[in-house]
Amino acid sequence: MTIKNIIVGGLLFAGVSALAQAQTVAEMASQIEPEVIQWRHYLHQHPELSNREYETAKYLAKYLKDLGLEVQTGVAKTGVVAILDSGKPGPVVGLRADIDGLPVKELNSLPYRSEAIGEYRGEKVPVMHACGHDTHMAMLMGAAKILVAQKDQLKGKVKFVFQPAEEGAPNGEEGGAELMVKEGVLKNPNVDVMFGLHINSATDVGTVKYRAGGIMAAVDTFKIVIKGRQAHGAYPWKSVDPVVTSAQMIMALQTIVSRELTVIDDGAVVTVGIIKGGNRSNIIPEEVTLEGTIRTLNPAARTLIHEAMHRKVKAIAESMRASAELILPYGPAYPITYNDPSLMQQMLPTLVRTAGNEHVKEAKAVTGAEDFSFFQTQVPGLYLFVGGKPLAVAEADAPPHHTPDFYVDDSGMKLGVEVLTNLTMDYMNKAN
Image (tube, rainbow, N blue to C red; front, top):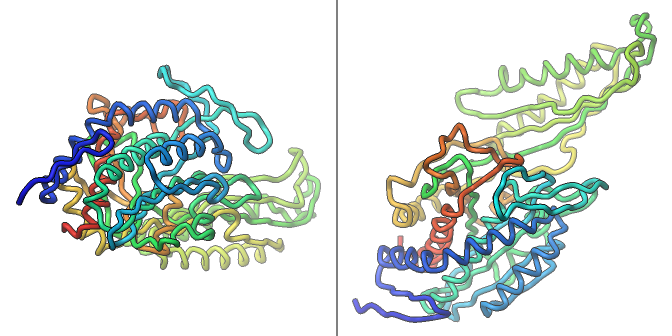
């Protein structure tokens, strides 16, 4: 087969086979890697909080327009969507990157560290890309540049989705992937498949991790309001004590996972993170509130935990002569981040060609959550992890996500650019 070489936008593409494609995409990713790093550094220095990514959106929109793409702004408040049309019939592939930062003060000494300030819950707070969303944007920008250069090799359309508010919309607001889906981001043109990835500070640079089925947990927040009768702490028999009642509930909730789930099959977490009640040490209060989170990795476990919580809260309150209201869900609820097994099987050879067999590893499911799951409830999708940890750093010493010391190395982004690009091309051309 004759190799056809084309220069588009300063990038060289040579297309013959899936393997040749992967090799060429790797070369192209190397060419633009300095730009990807530059984009990442700029975005890292200018983080913005959920639903407030105004300047980030302008930066992304200008870049995408300069690539010659059809661009839509203001999607789900501050999201940006761009479409690349190959001009040939074929599927519509969606590629997603999240764009919001976190209310975290950066404590490292990077020359591009963030000094940004934002507003969170009515207070001025430092803002940091403490989960790698800056790298996600830069990687998708890189993939967009390569895919534009390869336009004549594509069949169908690519929809680049830069999504706000993955970390959760501010109180009283909608946002994130759920709002994007509600506003029709998967329509016009209708998306056939979605690909997304997350950089990981504890995974070696050059590694990609995958899992068929549930890879990240569903999340449900809950609130329990326990009401009793107030009394002097010296005369507890005159009270209906919501403090003691809440203590019994907290312990009982832990038995749902340990005694009602099939622990060899189901991973789940029930955590109470907030207890509020009382204002003086010698007064038994009238009311106590509990708030917490539930994490599940399959729908059956999620249903069981919800049923068991209602049952236990009601029974314990009645046994203590108190009343209790369980509000579930209370606030945001995310579905399971579920990688379609047949799609995973189809695209796994792409990961191997891209990263090399020894660098493609099956991951264990994690109890963290991702709102990419809302896209996956509508269309088949894959969510993957790429490494951001320097090889010289031990996994135990890698700063975790959502912390002031969080760090991922620039060199991890090149693989992410290649993964997004090759998944798109292989799916379009049915190379597998």
